[in-house]
Amino acid sequence: MFRLRVSAVRLLGIVMLSCMSTESTSPEYHYYNQTLSWSDARSFCRDKHSDLATVTSMVEAQLLAQTAAGRGDAWIGLRNDGPARWLWSNGNGALSSSYLFPGEPNYSECSTDCCAEVTASGWNKLKCTRARRLVCRGNTSPYYFLQPHTSGWRDALDHCRSLNMYLPTVSSHPTVIDSSEITSFWVGLFQDRWAWSDESPTSLRYWMVGRPANLQGCAVVSVTDQGRWYEEQCEAEMPFVCQGGLKSRRVLIKLKMESDGDLDRSATSAQLLQQLEAQLRSQGISDFKLSWKSDIRRQDEMNENPAAESHGPGSEELKLDVD
Image (tube, rainbow, N blue to C red):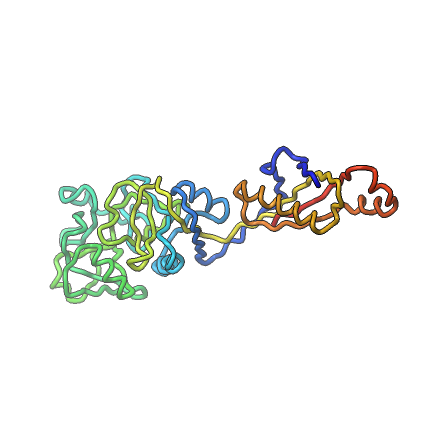
């Protein structure tokens, strides 16, 4: 028989000796299958990693899709939580004030789901579902390439991405192939209220067709449709994807042990470790490793006076490392 008494208020009162983060400079996503609301998932990710997943490029969007593939739809760090802004579709963030055109765009066309075109008279704002001529820009070239069809803004965006190109980001009329054939065309500006949990300025979006349909919600990466995103009520409980390296903590727990038996026996110490492990897991602590560090002075005393073993229950200070 043995008794375990913790010489601290509770196991929650663990003293943290050090904490370090192993952040990676490249995208690092971690999928968690437990279901939480978006806010709880964000808290979990901030505690164990950096934050919920942020996507800054199509390369990262594909990596995120691979992380969730074969598992289940999961929260990412995008939430509808902010004022309407004009953003660039290539991820470059909000429209700079230096790009603002004289006057305002035409606001009579739409109040929501608005995208921008360039016309002979300047910039214009209209519904993203309207059909316009399509121009794509190369990643390493200042040239713009006119595509021989019209489409809605999101179809235009997908078509340019399929060519490893993107919709133009321009402050004035670009140079296009056979510009006499075009009177207006889409540019990479769209209106948006979504923001990333880690406050990243990236404006890259990879929505499913027809999404987002709601003005409120949080973003979910789908395991189908090439890992595109859709919105869900933030209170729903779902798996989630964190980003950043796993934070590593080393803590020290001091326990006061009292036993009628021999604490040095492997069976007794193993049983104590099992009980402590169960208590730690009940407190939500899952990433740890336990090991004994015996009090050498106590052992020396026992060696010098073996008769002390028969004087009643032993009392010994032990230390455990939790990594």
